Amino acid sequence: MKSTFATLLSFVLLTVHVANVSATVYQTFDALPQNKQFDYIVVGGGIGGSVVASRLSENLFTSVLLIEAGPDDENEEDLAIPGNYPNSIPRRFHWNFTTTPQEGLGGRSIDYDRGYVLGGSTSVNGMVYTRGAAEDYDRWAKVTGDLGWTWALLWPYTIKHEKFTGATGGERSIAGQYNPLSHGYFGKSKVGLPWSGPTEFDNRAMAAAKDPKSEFKFNLDLNSGNPLGLTWTQSMSGDGERSSASKAYLTPDVRRRPNLHVVVNTQVTRVLATGQASKKDIRTVEVGTPNGPRKTVTAMQEVILSAGTIGTPQILLNSGIGDSAELNAVGVPVVHQLKDVGKNLSDHISTDRPDPAPVDRDAALAQWRASRTGPLTEAVGHTVMWSRLDKNSDAIKAHGDPSSGANAPHIELFLLSNIGNQMYGGAAVLMTPQSRGTVKIASSNPFDKPLIDLGFLTHPFDILALKDGIRTMKRFFAHSAWANYTATNVSPDPDAMGEGEWEGFTRSVGGTTLHAVGTCSMSKKGASNGVVDPNLKVKGLKGLRIVDGSVIPFVPTGHSMAAIYILSERASDLIKWRL
Ligand SMILES: Cc1cc2nc3c(=O)[nH]c(=O)nc-3n(C[C@H](O)[C@H](O)[C@H](O)COP(=O)(O)OP(=O)(O)OC[C@H]3O[C@@H](n4cnc5c(N)ncnc54)[C@H](O)[C@@H]3O)c2cc1C
Ligand SMILES: *[C@@H]1O[C@H](CO)[C@@H](O)[C@H](O)[C@H]1NC(C)=O
Ligand SMILES: *[C@@H]1O[C@H](CO)[C@@H](O)[C@H](O)[C@H]1NC(C)=O
Ligand SMILES: *[C@@H]1O[C@H](CO)[C@@H](O)[C@H](O)[C@H]1NC(C)=O
Image 1: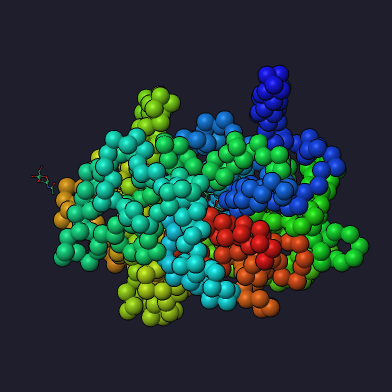
Image 2 (image 1 turned 45 degrees about the horizontal axis):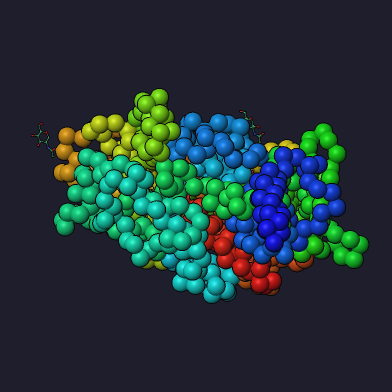
């Protein structure tokens, strides 16, 4: 009896030990066990990929392979420190993309960062957590004819993904700075309020918004589905650390699942037809290096593309899935005609913003390492203002109202509290752009950089709307609460400059918030436009689905990541239920 127990105990200990050493992250494709069969292959370890791989492998009888081009993020302190954003995150975790020369930005090419690491862009981003307006999601439902995409029916997925953790450090009260009913507490991604504050800047901003004579108002929680007003910033971080998609969904426990295999440092080049029966059954994934041989692996059930708004259309186009005329022009044989692949890119343009005031990094780093508190637990300012254009504004009178509904902001005022003592500044960001861009490929070589054209300021609505956004910011900072503060870097006054002069300046400084979506948009079942159906299956093909920001038809009226998490949680169920 005793020896049976001892045997059992040593077996358990051995199993735990083996499980520990065989955490299933492979550094190279060749290190994957040979002859292994996978039900699902997920391409790209960003939001979509981390969520789907994690959720599908909850069923121990479902085998999943996740392939990520960049390295593992485990034990990378640089990626765990929230305050490293943006300038202290090493370049080796980025794709280093730049855009094509932007006609609307005075011919400039601008950097277009994307994360190149497990966690994708959530490992390197600003962590600002905003869901946008409920009507944004209701519009997805309208565009696809699928009520499952409404804000209300997505709510269970919203709270399934979130684990609200309050303010880091726990020494300050956050009552009155968020609405407890707008949050989930048992999900995966940590979300919280800043460690510090309210600062003097925050108090002034609140006073300006709460003044009953002011046109502005305070809004308790920007994530309620109605974001309008001055709100406290929420961040996808908790306990002083960044909560990226990989940290939240590919935890050590998940990595140890015997049915989940994760391979990093492996770029997918194409997806290919599987077997001879049909050219439209696409379940084979090709990987490779610029000068090495290409290798393939085939899924028994499905391939899920989660390579992001840039990476996913790039892989489809490399594979001959896209507009046939464009594919012919770069010498890629057409496998499947689908004209909207890479079209309808939608992103937020921002006016220039000042740099944050420097912190004493050595002291801050020592504090962060010792207690996960201090200035390095925060990345951006504490407050954000969301506002609508007047219906009589030039932009709306001339070009209509592109917003999804009456609670959706046209303009985000990113108020900058971290630029120095007694100073105010901020950027106006256009939440409802009408300009659209594209992602194309330059050649038939999958290792060539994609051609990213944001199309910024190519639609006349957008420059007019930005102009009104800056006027809104000026009205806000004109409030007496800001007495004794000086302005820094608030864009020049459109009403004090010549028309052409102001516009030229704005085009010369305008930048991106890196929120692009839309390049593989969802649309109605059977509709000839769009790339995926309401269940995110690629139109006209078998075995291929897309789960990432590229399927979102209009950029949300918030920063993009929250919407992609919510979408990815629902998508995981669609796949599990074989819909
Ligand atoms: C610097 C920066 C700051 C941002 N700040 C914020 C913010 O504060 N708040 C917010 O809400 N949003 C922010 N965003 C946007 C947000 O991070 C993205 O919208 C979101 O992460 C996109 O998720 P995704 O899964 O679609 O793609 P990604 O997160 O980009 O993931 C795609 C993954 O696929 C991998 N991949 C791509 N191609 C291949 C291939 N061929 N083979 C294998 N793997 C591949 C990539 O390496 C990456 O890991 C920011 C983005 C950036 C870049
Ligand atoms: C981006 O540049 C850095 C060096 O600056 C490099 O280490 C990294 O590999 C590059 N990313 C890609 C995808 O090539
Ligand atoms: C501005 O500064 C003056 C002089 O220091 C001071 O008297 C006044 O109270 C300040 N106003 C505000 C709103 O802080
Ligand atoms: C993309 O944009 C084009 C041109 O505006 C439009 O015809 C098409 O229907 C759009 N596709 C989707 C899926 O929205």
